[in-house]
Amino acid sequence: MKAARAVITAASQGLSSCHTCGRVAAAAGHPCPRCGTPMHVRKPNSFERTVALIIAAVALYFPANLLPIMTVEGIGGAQRNTIVGGVFAFWETGSYPVAIIIFTASVIIPIVKIISLIILCVAVRRPTRNPRALTVLYRLTEIVGRWSMVDVFVVAILVTLVQLGRLMTIEPGPAALAFAGVVILTMLAAMSFDPRLIWDAHTRQSPGHPPHQP
Image (cartoon, rainbow, N blue to C red; front, side):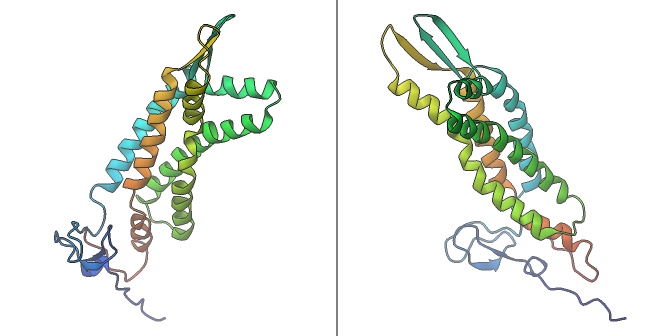
């Protein structure tokens, strides 16, 4: 049998790509020779920061869905709607596309994004045999996350446009702030996660592969 050939990587040679300009240079605490950005083989404390942000996002996800996201005050009194309650209200009035969009963007996408980030964090702590699929999952998490603010945008537009004096007023509820926090925290978690950790976990099980030095 042929001996496993050691694979030389940039990380094993102490090289890294600049996060700002893309220049490959030595990453041992030196600034980028092109733009001056501090160089790192991997994002410092990437795993720890990502986990902390995910935990904070999960903590805010429950009040974001249980508390009212907007309060409508009219002649018939005040009506408070949660995200799911608003989806049912649109569905009952026949606004099926709006209900589907809000449910997808405000309920499904945040859950999927949080679960995806948890999967990625678990994957980097154990050897993985399918790093390409995990990398695709990370890219998709980055792309779909920006569509999670639909509910907040809808409330902001309604508050601005639907101000009819004593007949009707719409005010944002506490869930709007909590939901915005969930979106921001998951976006920061995706940004702080270093996808190269996926390949580090994969190479740890590859014979003859030298581990990188963080």
